[in-house]
Structure formats: C-alpha cells, structure tokens
Image (cartoon, rainbow, N blue to C red; front, side, top):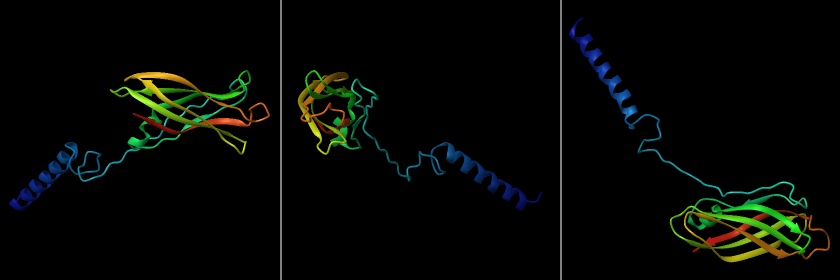
Amino acid sequence: MNKRHIRALAVFGIAVVALTGARGSGGGGCDNNSSSGSSSSSSSGGSGSHDNDDNGTSGGSVSGGSGSANEALRDITIDKCAYDAATKNLTARITIKNDGVLDYDYDVTLKFKGTSAVSATATTNDIAVAADASKSVDMTTPYTGTGDGSEYTKCEVTRASRS
C-alpha cells in the first residue's frame, strides 16, 4: 500500500471513531441529550370519571395544564358526582392529593353540568392537606330544579388554588 492509501484509511478511521464516539457521549447526533436541541414538557390535569352512579349521574373532569397557576388543579380528582334525593342536593366527592413537601390550604370551585341550561356551582375553601397526604371532601349545592337531578350528568373543577 502506498502512503496515500494509508493516510486515507487513517482519516476515515478517525472520522468513524469521532462520529460513533460523539453519539455515545451525548454530543451531536439525534439523541435527546444534545445541548443544542430544545425540549418541552406539558402536563394535563387529572380527571375522575365514574359511570353509573346511584342515580345515573356520571363523569367528572378537572381542567389542567402546565404552569404553577394550575398546580392545585392537578392535585384534585373527582371521585363521585351525583344527585342526593334525600337532601335534594347535587353532591360531588373530590380527593386532593398533596405530593409536595409543604402543607397547603385549597380553595375549590366545582360546576355541575349537563343538559340543563343552568349550571350549578359548589365552592369550598380552606381545605387543609398536609404534605405528602390526601384528603377527601364532599362538595354540595342545592338542587333548584323540579325533576330528579338527572339533567346534571357531569362535574368539572373550574377553579382551584392553594396557599
């Protein structure tokens, strides 16, 4: 072999080592560790949904999203959404799970929605939840309709905050 071929093979070998070595170390290539790339993350709120509660009322959702303003929303799950014939109230049971390292007081607004043109709203304030703990709370609002409450088919947490 002449010197030109040896030099070409050496350059080719160095190029191969450089390319494969760089990819394994997180530089260059198309991996997710590249510092020149960008990354994004998003988070959506939790949701609770229960079909066929005692009176047929079902469904529940929690609005969510990313950002610190929505952290309280992500901590809430709707366990039950129903009409209570005995008390003539619309009721919902929510669970607040505080995975943080600080204790928080939560304020929650929940809407009962369905085929009725008028939504019903329940609000509760100052629900104390210790760090790394959960608490279940019943939220109620008077039923103002004349039927059996079946027009309200789902619940949705529309506002939540923690302090």
